Picture 1 (cartoon, rainbow, N blue to C red):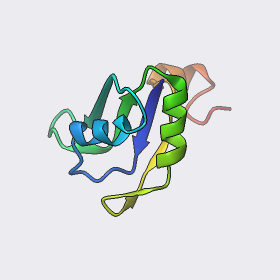
Picture 2 (cartoon, rainbow, N blue to C red; picture 1 turned 90 degrees about the vertical axis):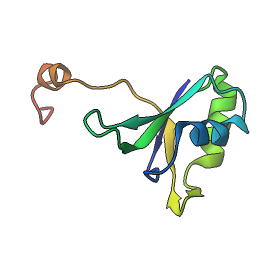
Picture 3 (tube, rainbow, N blue to C red; picture 1 turned 90 degrees about the horizontal axis):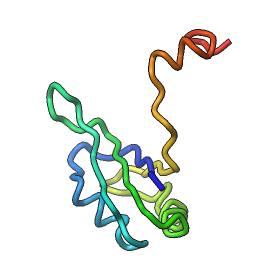
Length: 95
């Protein structure tokens, strides 16, 4: 299961994110998303856990908990939307 982790402090590293979830089971990879031009953190990351039961346990345990004085927002990741998706669904406002 791919997990979205939001409201991260900009100083959090991918390794730190991985160790946060490793307490709940095997983590295949964890990555902080960065801005392509600056390399600065975008304030969220993605974690991939192969066992859905472990992933759900981690989501329930960590969602809303403070990390570096910020409450984490954690849920199952949704597919990324593109501009094409926005037009296909009736425009930017999704009529």
